[in-house]
Structure formats: structure tokens, C-alpha cells
Image (cartoon, rainbow, N blue to C red; front, side):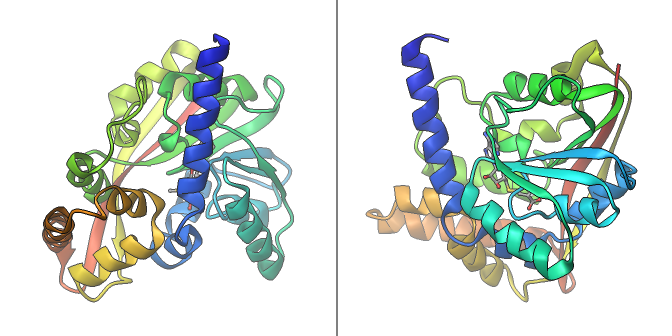
Length: 273
Ligand SMILES: C[S@@+](CC[C@H](N)C(=O)[O-])C[C@H]1O[C@@H](n2cnc3c(N)ncnc32)[C@H](O)[C@@H]1O
């Protein structure tokens, strides 16, 4: 990488760090999607004594349940503010694990250090997919497990990103859209022949935190960094704010069934060759 490219990458990652530290992401993790972390831990078959890396761990949605199995867990994330919250949650739950600031595209670990490398809707937000996938593969030992839970492009969160796109600033050159990690073929091609036994299934997360589409939208406007950033981009344009408000409420309404929402994700596990 040229020194100019390296400088641009540092600036982009600083922006992402600020984005994920804005609002209150830990409230999303613990109030809206808490079932996803334990589901990933179960799919990776994590057991006591294994050395486990969680990439894009946030406040520990997957890392803490992994540590509670007795595994030796490192929770890594770009945003240290989220790791701090995770550290407190872990203490409250009696879990012991290590918390470390790290970019998924340049992990500070040796080759083959981990028995399990997992990410719960985390690595999908690193902008350069191949670089991030190469790091997941590199730090996992031969015979170890790579496990990824990612929002699909067709599911609610994938559609929320598609809805927000026209209102967002243009993505930096080379950055790829996060919900592509919810496309099985895309992930298979990122991991390539460095893994075997790929198992991928689409599942639905039931979200019963909200009584109405508007409540859901407004919660995300307050707590979720990517949504906050898009509204900031159009803050001086009231017509656009009203337009996005309506589109997000409509989208959310389409994913309500009775009192709860259903959000689709791809759960993919593979064995490192
Ligand atoms: C939607 S949150 C998921 C957090 C957690 N895994 C969970 O299940 O709640 C996405 C996380 O990815 C992290 N992230 C974004 N870009 C990253 C990168 N390049 N390297 C490491 N983590 C990153 C964010 O800081 C954030 O914590």
C-alpha cells in the first residue's frame, strides 16, 4: 500500500470508529439482537478450553456467551468505546475475556492462533471484504472453525441500508456494501479453497422490542451509528429527512408480523483447510 493509500485508510477507519461510537450501539446489541450472539456461539460449537477470536465484537454480544462456555476468548473491535461497555457487561455476568482494539483488515495476531474465528454482524462492516476475509482465514488454525452471522441483502437490515443509500454520502472508492456478506456465494468466493465443509443457512431473528414501525425507526435514529450518520448528512434538508422518515417506517411496517419483526441473516460456518 502506498503511503497515500495508507493515510486514506487510516482516515476511513477513524471515521468508522467515530460512527460506531456514536449513539448507543450497546443498546441495539442488548435490547434488539441479543439472540444472535449465542446463536453464533452455538453454531460454532464453542467449548471450554478453545481459543476463540471475535472480530468486530462490539460490546460482546457473541464474545461474552463464548467466554461463558469456558473458552479462552479475545473480543476485538475497531471502537474501544464499545469494548469498554463490553468489559462492564462481562464483569456483571461473571465472564472473563480479553478486549482488544483491532482493525479486522489488519489483525494484530499470529497465523493460526485461534481454534475458532467468528464475527456476529461485525466483519461485514469492514470496507474491504477480501482483506478482511484473508485475515479471518490467516489467524484460524488448520481444522479450526470460521463462523459468520451476517444480515442478508434481502432481509430487513440489508433493505434498511439500501433505503438509506440515496441519502448517504457516496462511499469511499473501493469500499464494498456490508450486506454482501449475507450473500452465500460472495462469502464462499472470499474464503475460496482455504476452507472446506461450508454450511450456510438463512434464519430469521425475531425482534419484539418495538410496538410500531415508527418506534423502531426512531430508536435506530438515536442509537445506530450508520443511521445517525445518514440523517446527519441530510440534516439541513427537511424534505429529505421527511422522505427518509417515511421510507424507513414503511420498510419497517413491511417486516412486522403481528407484534414482532423478523430480520433475516445468513449463518455460515466453515472449516479451515
Ligand atoms: C453491528 S456492530 C456488531 C457488534 C457485535 N458483534 C454484536 O453482535 O453486537 C458492528 C461492529 O463492527 C465494528 N467494526 C466496524 N468496522 C470494523 C473494522 N474495520 N474492524 C473491526 N471492527 C469493525 C464496529 O465498531 C461495531 O462494533
